[in-house]
Amino acid sequence: MSIKVENIVYVYGEGTPFRTVALDDVNLNIEKGDFVGIIGHTGSGKSTLIQLLNGLEMPASGKTTVDDKVVGSDRSELRKIRQTVGLVFQYPEYQLFEETVEKDVAFGPLNLELPENEIKSRVKDALQAVGFNYNEIKDKSPFDLSGGQKRRVAIAGVLAMKPDYLILDEPTAGLDPSGRNEILEQIRKLHKSSNQTVILVSHSMEDIAKLVDKVIVLFKGKVHMQGTPKEVYKNAEELIKIGLGVPQIVEVVSELRKKGFNIKDDIITVEEAKLEIIKELRRQSVKKTLHTSEESKNDSSSHSMMPQNGITGGKNV
Image (spheres, rainbow, N blue to C red):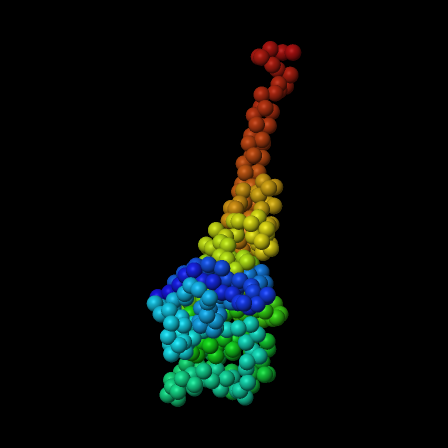
């Protein structure tokens, strides 16, 4: 079970003076259970790519396959593919419209004409999956919630459709630090608890470093590099060259290593750096203690060999 993108080319404004190649011969594979981060600066093709993954857009050439079904080959299958690949756009809270949270999350399942008990079960599970107490939140107006809570309700609305793959386009955009942390923590828990396949699109190198297992870097419509976060962030100079940079902690670690700190060169999170620095400081402390002890021993030995009571070599001086 996977999403495969093979030799995808997507062009905007074909046949006009404004023709732009948004994606150029893109190939990638996303396995069931993966937590993938897609990064790239504005115009790199991130949003176009994720819209191709669930059939909102169709390529000029190449193909996207979702669980062995080619997207767009059968128009009647598109609805099913869009249920399989759930997409949460930027600022999804602007799509909230019902009078209660429960009704809003139930909107998608209702359109599937599911039995009432199945709809209620899906709504409850989806709200709990994003960290809400169902009984406490279900009757509240979505418009009385905080920004982070509204966004979690919007994500729950997509989860209620039971997608096998969940795509989140800049899920923390516009939120304050508290809201950002709230959303990211729930996404992390969602993936960990249910092995939900998550594709996270973000500008934040720090968020990607902390959360995902695999990183795909887009640049000028091409896959510029991909690998684990540690593999990708080791190419700091190249990432800076294409305008992305690296998490600040990567730069801090690099400077500490230049100053003689014996710490790993593949640290990408503050938590990893903290542990490594503590270990290094302890090593230095032990080394200093041993050195001081050795010096004290040598001083003591030298002192014992000095002349005492005016006697040297067994003769009076």
